Image 1 (cartoon, rainbow, N blue to C red):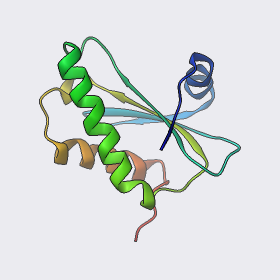
Image 2: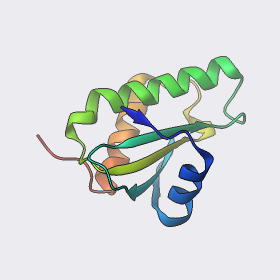
Image 3: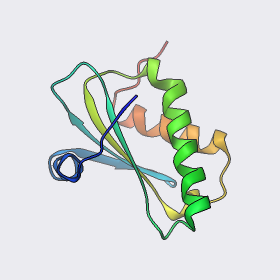
Image 4: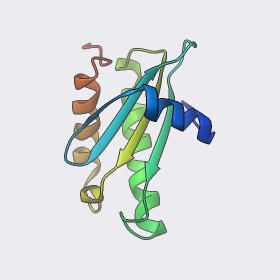
Length: 110
């Protein structure tokens, strides 16, 4: 999984991309010119202290990694955690992520 790191990459996805949201996550999506998806995960300080934020980030990253084979490639994706995600289980985070990928039509049904 490649990650988005530069601020200019994030800004481009925010301004030109399309976004969908559900109770726990917000997802921005923009086509890139590569064969791979690049993913950026953002967890604000409003979600909690560094331990909580890092746990949320790990849950999102892991649920993306395990489902990556089901996603259409060639996109820059930013996943933003909402404050409601705090304390949620892996299954809840994974189902929220799957819901957003279906809304964006990047999920391939196996």
